[in-house]
Image (cartoon, rainbow, N blue to C red):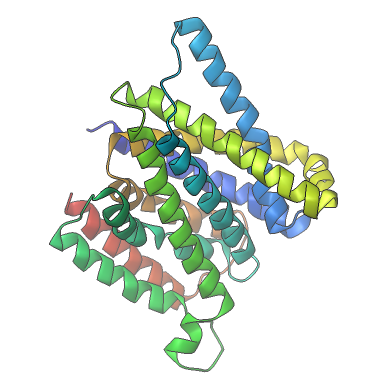
Length: 300
């Protein structure tokens, strides 16, 4: 089994737990921006310390951090901030499992963004899977009990937030792979660690400054919820490291395709932890999207 497969599965599990914690924070104590910042605030210092410890004990130096590297870092980091805010806001519009499913349109869009930015194409079979995924999104865009056309349902707030998060997460995934490729041909795990440290430091500083200037009360609220925020940081660190490692090893579109196993994890979380009801239409949409994911994986 290729190493990127178990690494990706671990990333999906970590990410599901983190979103569960962020959902709890956003619905009780923090705004979407605050719940997003909590992730970076409590993970960036831990990641930086871990890299520093590795460099010290291994006697290894940082590779050259070029302008191209920092360009990918800033684009990817900013896209991920905005995407995470969209997902946390989406939790207040639809239930947890469907929110994650909307977010997972990123696998479809990552293939397109990866081709445009890095020139990493997909096969004809992958294109068929992409179209199948589009049908699944149309099913999920319907809000139960509301009349109207498909276009109206597709353009509602919940659908817009989900699709926007997918586009932004696609840009972040491809940018992170681009950043790691700028570091040369060293060990994949080391390049992933360096890229992750740079990205999370940028995210913590930029978003912290924004909240300081715009909403200092939210900064205090993030500190007040530190008992949960620490676990957000720990799960974020584990998940982010696994994602970055997988992106360094494999085409970002394929990593995101396998990462759709998160659909199963999120459905379990939705029903077992949040006691939410999933409708028949939503199950059909998630099943169809899962089928498109399987089709995409089989083309690798």
